[in-house]
Every structure is written in C-alpha cells, then in structure tokens.
Length: 168
Image (cartoon, rainbow, N blue to C red):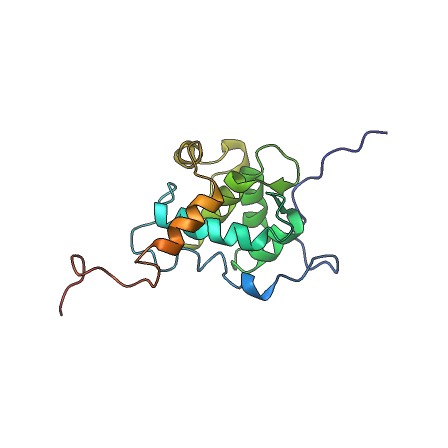
C-alpha cells in the first residue's frame, strides 16, 4: 500500500519523539534577524541569507540537505509564535509537501517566522507565500557558499561601519 507523504509537523504540544537540538544550534528564529536594523521585508537581505545558511548547516545534522519536520519544529518552538502561525508558515514553506525542508524552503520558513516576530502579518494559507519572498528564493545561493561568505564578512560581529555610525 502506498504511504502518503507526511503533512506539516504537529505544532500541538511537545512530543517525546522530538529530538534534542545540538548545543551548537542555539540560535533562535526570533534572533536570526534581531540585529538587522532595516524594517521587516519579505525579501531577505544578503546578511539574513548568510545567517540562515549557517543555521541550516548546523541544523542539518546528517548532512543530507534537508531539515526534517521534527528538527524544524524544535527551531520553530523557540520563536514564541502560536501553533496556528507556525503551521501557516510551515504550509507556505514546504512547497513540495514532503514533510521536510530543502535549503530554499528552510529560508522561506525562517524568514516568514522572522518577519512575523518583527510585526508583519503572515498571508493566509489560501494566499500562498508572499510573491516577493518566492521570487527572492529563485536565485538563492547554496548554503555552503553563503556560510563561507558569512565567515569572511567583517560585519559578523554586528558592529556598524564608520560610514553609517553617528556620534551622539
């Protein structure tokens, strides 16, 4: 008998089957963009994409290029959003409905949650993901490349550049 693909992860209470996240994966979704000073936008900045790539690589513990539903749920639970909003974000992100997220889908999920925690309203399930987000993910670099850019970035510590800082 054919087994249907898994649906979105159950965001109702905790399951004993939810694996513990490794200590190196302590970055929460709500803090993934907390140091970003620009107003929330459905289009992730290059800096946000680099952060999401690092988080993806740390969360994909088996290195298969996918984040399983239980791993994603553990991250989502840290956002502080309610179950309905998390389920809506998952529905928008898991485009192929296979119950796991490739890198592009993961960026979509994390960015949707980040934007929601910063005040934007998630579109309804019938509306689909924001078109600006979907368009921005079409040319997304591989996570390894973005992570390497983050490692080389002088702004990794979050300090402002002299050109943008002001004396008070």
